[in-house]
Image (cartoon, rainbow, N blue to C red):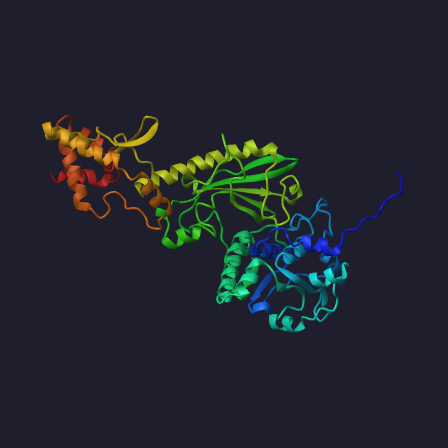
Length: 505
């Protein structure tokens, strides 16, 4: 092999400016830095977002193992570790770019201070993009002057502090010049805290087995402890339906998959329903949840899967959520991006994932549609042979009809005789004006529960049972009439009232 070559190094200023455009949001940028703190075995992570106009700053402080000066140099080196190199199973890193690219997406001055022992010297390095561009050299500043800020933050003697100054993301440019800038800044910070509660919920709850520090990790945002949000547990009293754990073998590694059908909102309290929707709401949070080393990467996405076309996020599947556990050794195969917010399943397992998700989606649809139409029901299956409404088609479209064989409807028609023509006309008007879209939207979007049939209408319930029973007696025995009432909507909900109502006749 010839040694005749041209050594072409990247231009520092152009390269660094390019690395600011990876598309991080504030929440994904901060989450990337929290990854580093967790990998460094931090028990506590403090995120301080200080508003002071153009002098605003954001700091991420942890009490992890810290870094020596040489370790700090490597941490500050863009791409200091090959993403193809093997990592420890609990290592949340990927490209060795996150600290830099996440930070530069939000600021032009990044300082890292770290110490490894109590009473020891604190190591400092700063990347100042304007300074690099001025000299067009990869110059990291050693004499960072941030001691006053460190005193304000009360950083621990052992651990690492990441400081963002000269904030530059569009949010900061906009809010600095606005009269309500501080409120906008604070709103963005609240969104960050909600997002961290979702992404790191297993670590916050102390159930992450990959956490080297046993027990929960505490993440504070402006002194407020972050609450975990578990996408699969929306109520302490009402459990989700869970499919058996499925394992897919891929390249010698096992991918664990589990499906969940969440409780319908009429089973939840108002607070549980609101919190169960997560950061983005029930509709957006349906789909797959991909975990890597127990850190959530993707929070609700159908990953382009589906038959015969990719699935969209639809109301009838809002209760469907599926978890997938992947090891960090398969990052390349899952096309994990730098921000660790996007992953794509390998083609070889897409059919299997689709099969598993179809079952969860179908169960979720049944739970959503049934409860949305009929409200709460008693425990156990409800037998029904005489529904009040029927679904059919006309000219290729769905229509809903009142069941003419329903005992009360049929008995009323017979009793009316010649006037049954008028009765049928009235039924047709009701059928042709069913507000299907309104019912659907109310069921999907309203925080209010829908009334159970005959709820708080005890007198009317007994009266209607008795009237229907009288019609049935014209053509069958007492016991047959009672048996038919037990499978006739909506009386089938009130098995213990049927005979009581009849005995009162």
